[in-house]
Structure formats: structure tokens, C-alpha cells
Image (cartoon, rainbow over the protein chains, first blue to last red):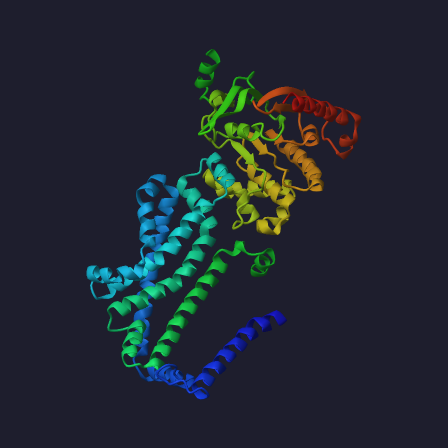
Amino acid sequence: MSNKVKAIGYPVVTALVLLTIWICAVEVFKVPDYLIPAPGAVLGTLYTGYIEGHYWSDFFFTLRNTLVGYATGACLALVLGAFVAESKTFERFFFPYIVALQATPKVAIAPLILVWFGYGMASKVVLIALMTFFPVFINTISGLRQTNPAMLDLMKVCSASRLHVFLNVKLPAAAGHIFAGLQISVVLSLIGAVVSEFVSSSKGLGYLIQSASVNMDVATMFACLFSLIAIGVTGTQLMSVLHRRLVFWERNTSQTLSTHE
Amino acid sequence: MHSQAQSMSNGGAVAADDMPLVAAQNLSVVFRGSRGSVTALQDLSVSVGRGEFVSVIGPSGCGKSTLTRVFSGLLKPTQGSAFLKGTKIDRPRGDVGMVFQQANLLPWKTVLDNVLVPARALRQNIAQAREAAMDLLRLVGLERFAHNYPSELSGGMQQRVGIARGLIHNPDLLLMDEPFSALDTMTRDHMSLELQRIWMARKTSALFITHSIAEAVFLSDRVLVMSARPGTIVEEITIDLPRPRTLETMASPEFAEYCLVLRKLFEKLVHFN
């Protein structure tokens, strides 16, 4: 019980301290509002943005692109990762180039993606998918490869089909790794979304930040930043809940028992 | 040649009466690596009769596990062949059960579903297999835990699930590769008693790999002694102790005598190397 209080209470204390420093910076040390806006100004911007203004449409624009790109990238990563892990031939053909693509800073090819896929949603989704791809891809491969060899022997002795082994043994064994990749990718996909809007967009939270910078409208930038943080934290937490629910066996026994009853 | 033709005419699966259930003649397994080749097994001959419990005992690294891989069809011998029910084992064929050093249960499946893993892989009728699995769990004393997850079981219990899983598809041969080596000493004694009881109830032919002399003597009808480098059978001892053997058997002079004979043999083997 007291642990629970600590788990919730301590971060709240940190938040209050940070908020106090913020308020002090603005009120006591008079940091000008074109550098740091007052907390109240940010709240005001959030209020007018979301209640009276157009923020929701920007919010959903960014969210939609992120979700579509994330889903596309994650699915591709799962399928290609499975092929690389399962087929030595496939690995030899493609793996070096996939690694080279990983080494490429994706942000650097954002303008190129724009040229290829146009100014619409497609170019944004492609960049987000690229950002999402690698953590899921690499984790899928390493997860599938660490299957217990004795278990694979047992399946071979029972002349199990390759698909049967994949679905019943390898994939569940890799699930923990895959979810770790999916969790990392949430934040990367958001980076992709913002960068894609920086490069070219007339909508979205990333676009709002950029256009606000032209007017030195720091309050708007903060408001959009908090919105992005909200998406990132929600997405990451959602993945972590899914992880714990679906990969229930990678926890200690007492927790397994408690979910059971 | 003649007996081969006969077994072919019987569908290739029925063995001649004089042939043991499991037989291997002059098996050799050579692993060729980049740093030369290693002879794991050399000129090794083994047989297991129907319903017989045979142990293979030997020092670490003598190729005992290689032997189980040959009998399960996972590894093709370099020379010679292994036969099961009169037909050559040249690939996995679903009539062999395996129990490993670790229980190797799937943590996301319940105990019952773990026992059913081979049945599902072999695409057997699952309704029937489920009943058989419950019977087996009753036999190994774990029917109350059928719907628990492996993480909720002790090491000994997990290995009993492993044995039940090894038997679910009614294999002709049960291969056990040091199944108790990961357990503590007290659990091991208990597991020996349990395994004997399970084996006597099922009468499945068993090949039991171990490096415990007491375990081998306690469980086996015959003990085969293997030497290392090259791995081959150097001695065969028939254990003529009445069954069911009990904890008292372990304290009997006959039991001690068998153990002593085997210990002396190993002593010689060690010096020989």
C-alpha cells in the first residue's frame, strides 16, 4: 500500500517542483514570454486551441498519420522479420541492405520521400512507417531466433509443420521481444510524424509548432508539445498494457496467479 | 535380405519376432568441423526390447545425447543405422517420445496444453488426446494442476509434466536424456520411484541416459556403459532385481553390489583415458 502511495506520490512531487521552477522563472526572474511562456498562458492556449479553436483537427491529423504509419511499419517489420528469421536465403539476399537502410538517418531522406510520394498523406505515412520499422524488425528477428532448441527438437520429432512450429512455439516465444520493439517504435513514429510535417504540411501538431516559431509564439509551441507528449505517453502505456496482458507468462508467478483469479 | 523382404510385405512396420524393438548396429557419428572432425560415436551397437528399460551411462561428453538424437531421427549416423520396429530411423517419425534435461515446457500454455503439444503437432484427435492427457496427468499425480501454468509448479512437477508429454502420443520408445539432472538430490530419488511406477503402468520401452549410477541401477533392466572418445558401449550389465523396486532396494546388498561393479568399471575407464 505504502509502495503504491510512493509510486504515485513521488512523481507528483517532481512535477510540483518543476512547475514551481517554471513559475519562478517566469514570475520572479522575469524570463521574457517569448522564451518561456507562463504556465497559465500555455493552459490558455490549450483551452482556446482545443475548446474554441482548430487544434482537434490538427491533433487528429497527426494522430491519424501516426497510427496508419505505425501500423504499416509494424506489420511490414513483423512479416519481413519473420522471413529473415525463418529463411537463411531470404536473409542473405536482403539483410545487409535492410541494415544499411537502418543506418541511414531517416530524417535525412524525408525530403526525398516528399519528392517521391508527394505532399499528401502518403509521404508522411512512409516516413512514419520507416521510423517504426527497425525496432520491431530487429526485435522480431532476435525474438524468433532465441527459441529454445530443445523445444524445436521436440516439434521436429513430432513432425510438426513449419507453420505449426512458427505459430505455436516461435511466435509466442518472441512475443516479449516484439512488444519491446513495438513500445520503442511508438515514440519513433511520433518523431516521424512531426518531421514529415516540418518538411511539408499545412496541418498537424508539427506544422503548428513550425508556424508558431515564425511568430515566436512559444505558448502554442508548448501546447502542441504537450499534445504530442500526451499521444506518445498514451501510446507507450497502451503497448505496455497489451504487452503485460498478452505476454502474461513473462512476469513473476504471484502476478500470474492474481490475474488468474 | 530375406527378413527385410518379409517386413516389407507386412507393410514395412511389423518387425520380425526375433528382432528387438529398437536396434542399432555399428553406429558411427562423426562431426566434421572447421577444426577437424570429432568422432562422437564409434561402432556402437544397442538394442532395447519391447517393454524393456535400458539405461546408458557414461562420463560427460561421451556422446550419450548424440545417441538420443540418432534414435529420435534428428541426426543421421555417419555409418550404420538405427531401427525401430524393424524400419530404419532416417527421419523423425512421431513414434518416439522425448524427455529432456530441462522440462522445457511452454510457459504460455497450461499443464494440460503442454502435455498435448505432441498430439497437436501430430494432428491427432484432440478430444481423445485430451482424455489421454488427463489420464497421464493422473498417472504422474498432477491432475489437480492441469489448468495451472508451468511457472506455478516446482522443478520436479514440471519434469513430471515433461514425462507425461513424452508419453501422450503413445510412442514405441521413450527417450530420456538425463531428465533428472536439473533437480535437487531429494527430488531425484522421488522421481526415480515415480518414473518406475509410470513405466510399470505403461510398459513403454525406454532408453534412459544418465550419469548417475544409482539411478541407472534402480530403474533399469539393463545398464549399458559407454566410454568417451570414442563413444562406444564397453560393458553391458543386466540388473536382476525384483520390481517394484523400493527405497529398501536401494539399501540392499545386491543393489550396492551392482553399483560397486559399475563404479569399478568407471574407475578403469578413467585410468584408461
